[in-house]
Length: 497
Ligand code: NAD
Image 1: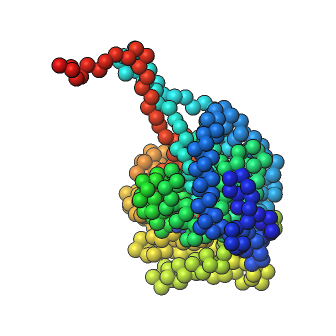
Image 2 (image 1 turned 135 degrees about the vertical axis):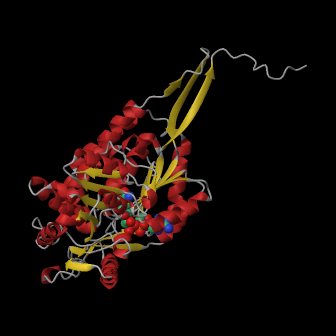
Image 3 (image 1 turned 180 degrees about the horizontal axis):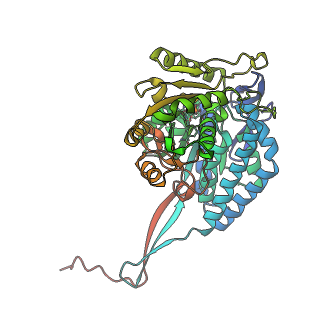
């Protein structure tokens, strides 16, 4: 970046073959955060070929799990050493607060630590086939060349959910961060080089998905595509990959319900519920795939609950993520703010009742950034676009219910199924509702937390496949059954008579 080469192909840093670059914009003030090389289709194809060659060469995939485990731990150490500089890059690129970026880098570190442990203890599965002469075992092998495509909301975190298990499994790869937020991934790939990842194992290209998509996904040299991003892109990639019967895992959007029952009462549980509904939707200005954008609240407490939310939403301090006083930053780009504004205008025209926000902040110091006020719409119903479509911005819609079954029906009435929250003081009801919800992660009396050891992914159109946990490693592995007869004898089927 800024004159240094940003593409990493076959262990060499280089500029784009046609000299192309792209400005990465700091959304807090519209300034240019960095100028980054923009790969061509030919550069991306070379990156895939380099990953193919590194895989077929066999040296990397022949490393032992123990060796790869040590490497993953070393990467985790380096991430912690450089936590501050990586956090600053993440904040400049995404606009999120520095506090959030630091948490992200800690989370990235724990993903590497988790897979360092897991690959170190994985064992073959031995099967008793009923013949003592036969040793039957199922072994795990790397799936091959992986294309890893990440979105802009958690740039390095989402990429780490892919790179860590891919390295742990012994795969080679081409990583493509979002063209909107490439900076932390470029810095990170330098760290991988320092940690001793061999040339060709991790390759890096930057550029728009539209320009590089075909080279990365419509390519017979690719064995697995792991994609995180929007539903439309996920569909396109899945269709293209099907031509080559390439395995694809897609982590897509969400329209996540947060259900609040009146039995939470008025004490600490009330306070925690208001706080977590607020955080669940307005953290990172709502640009979170699992954001709790649909409040589904029991009618008897709805007026008071929404009034309290409005009071707190209006106190959220917006500002440059580098400013320690800021509680939330801008939207990632002007283009994205325009999309959010379009959704708000439609919601108003559909009859949703705007109770706070609904505009850019009036504060003159925020004028140059792509800020948007925390916004709440009351009296929404499931026919409205604002309730059904993912806005990916600081927008909360409120739907009301009177019966438990109605709450469940509303919570499941989405084409997505990524995450949901339930708040109740009744443990039996909690268990009933949690089990009835068709979402990949469900929080009971909490919201937004996750761990590297538990699978993450969606039901419905929130995607297929899982990241994190043991399944997140298995995605990068092929299973091979080895049948070894230690005392071979004729099958005796054909008599030769
Ligand atoms: P996006 O789909 O526009 O882009 C995601 C990535 O795909 C980018 O790197 C982009 O360059 C690339 N891309 C675009 N078109 C492509 C093509 N034809 N071929 C190959 N690559 C292509 O999504 P975004 O706007 O960057 O991210 C926001 C979306 O990501 C939201 O829908 C959000 O819910 C989702 N998301 C999901 C999760 C999850 O875990 N399920 C996590 C984070 C974000």
